[in-house]
Picture 1 (cartoon, rainbow, N blue to C red):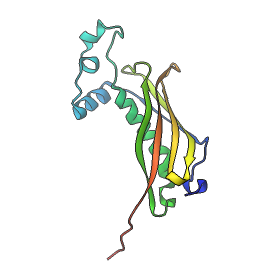
Picture 2 (tube, rainbow, N blue to C red):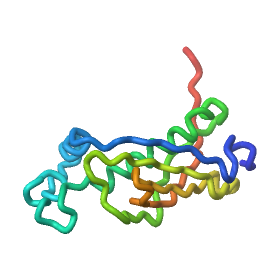
Picture 3 (cartoon, helix red, strand yellow):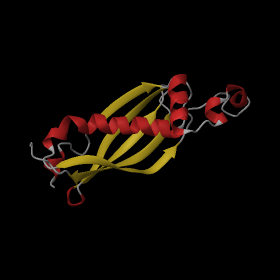
Picture 4 (cartoon, helix red, strand yellow):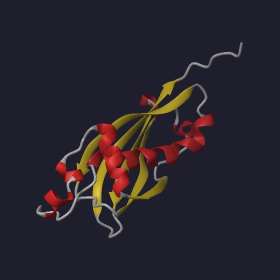
Length: 152
């Protein structure tokens, strides 16, 4: 695979924003089973250093995943015989809390294309409405072969 086959270039960037609601956090807690007081007990968290409940860090990572979809989906039909699949996130750090009502913006920027490995590395940075970085990671996207079945 050469750089042109990725249909994205180093430096390409997209942004995705989402305001985190109470229902987002409770639905995520229910799906994952993570009903920690940190996320679901307002009284408990009112006495904490944060003063209020915080969203799950991995909910923020879900927004990072959405940003990768926004970056690559417009090109999916161009990847003949290949499809981009997330290999995961390296160096994930949660640097500040995300509170209910915060608007999180994900900046997803292509950092490196590795043609021989059929993968792209992207810097992913999540900030809140105050411009504070709340999370960051390196996303690894890999292109894997897809078998195309013939119509019967």
